Length: 95
Image (tube, rainbow, N blue to C red):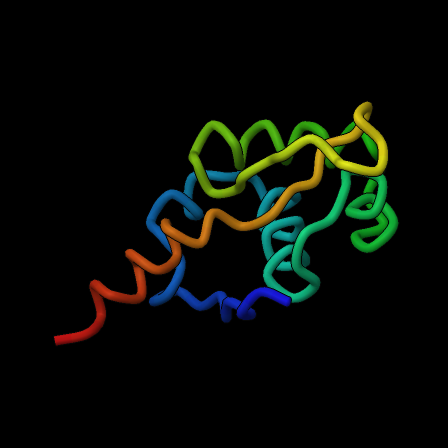
């Protein structure tokens, strides 16, 4: 399992400020749950799939998430946090 990222105003990249609330919710769920498909994100967030798809597009535009084709179903993508972006934000805080 991947290391859990704690999202706060100091650990999240500045790009998080530029995404809509639905994208912030999706980002928070990914931080807590790890890698998920779009349908799993819709289930976890209780958002319509169309809203999740819009949020994922915004997050990908800001390079906040990574996506890979699912090994179990090539029609789906598995989304996860771009940990490099969040690691960079965390390192900026350290002296």
